[in-house]
Amino acid sequence: MPDRAPQPVDRQLPTDEARDLISLVRDIAQREIAPSAAEEEDAGRFPREVFTLLSDSGLLGLPYDAEYGGGEQPYEVYLQVLEELAAARLTVGLGVSVHTLASYALAAYGTKEQQVEHLPAMLGGGLLGAYCLSEPASGSDAASLRTKAVRDGDSWVLTGTKAWITHGGIADFYTVMARTGVDGPRGITAFLVPGDAEGLSVAVPEKKMGLKGSPTAQVHLDGVRVPDARRLGEEGQGFAIALSALDSGRLGIAACAIGVAQAALDEAVSYAAERRQFGKPISDFQGLRFMLADMATQVEAGRALYLTAARLRDAGLPFAKQAAMAKLFCTDTAMRVTTDAVQVLGGYGYTADFPAERYMREAKVLQIVEGTNQIQRMVIARHLAGPEER
Image (cartoon, rainbow, N blue to C red; front, side, top):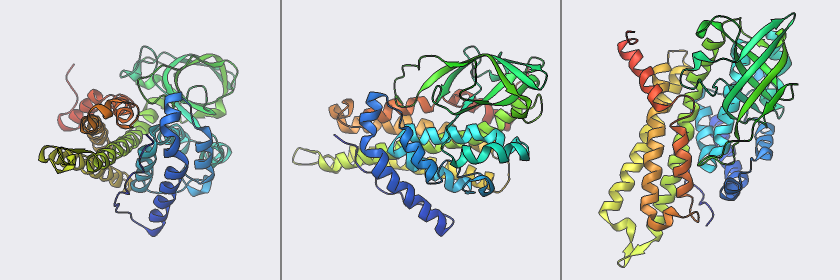
């Protein structure tokens, strides 16, 4: 059975321009993304043509400066765009979030010359990015990464392996964190590596539980030569850049999670109104009505939490704690709501004929990517009680 079109969310948007933007995104989502989502996910197909359309429509650079081809939209609006896209297909919503994350180092820390040279193509020229921090032996402990960058005249030579890279093998550029100095966070530097760089290769994509249309793979750097002009920020600043990017990226994951949860809620409500047992729709049974009410309340609470964090970011105020809270709560909410949606559909929820089971499989990964939810709890606790004693 094809995915049902989601019910429009009643959004509070700051401007008429933002309302028009959301309408455009909904139209693209319903016409170009949702109709083929289940089939393409099952086939493991990445929809590159959709990302080309999004780029042409100005949707791949929404939070960045218009001077370089961005949309100059506040995060309050950008995140709601991500939610709409993720509700139609998580591969697309998450892909836009990852591309935004990959573009962050250049947009926030690059020189004027670097931004003029590279950002227009990244934000509106059809390019797609990937973010390379994790490694096979350093995931949550990202500061222990071992990929090395050695200075050689006016260039750097990068050697190592990055792991769990979304868009690995299809990205046009990789924002890579590599060690240029001492052990620990102070010895890491960021680089902008072309996707076709000599010495860069990609392993066979991981076989995942869900999100099968989005390739996740190891990226091998075997003596990849990168000009110093592609170093982003100062030497040794890379880990600070990575953490700053992840604060914003976690909001993207939170918004995607609420998109998936909203899609699951819509599916459950629609099914409950249509399915009849004991002579009446199952939505008339109080036990199920209460379940739907709880699901809807969790979705609304998650949306409010990520928007609160976004508004802090837009106001230039600290938001790292709220970003961690939003990522934690919204992704846990997505897991609960999608699991409940499967239960509402009963046996049908466990079949691939309905999208509820796909939503549940996809929700799981959101509790893991860009900092597991255990790491988010550590971040939140650190803001509340200070660092742990060693």
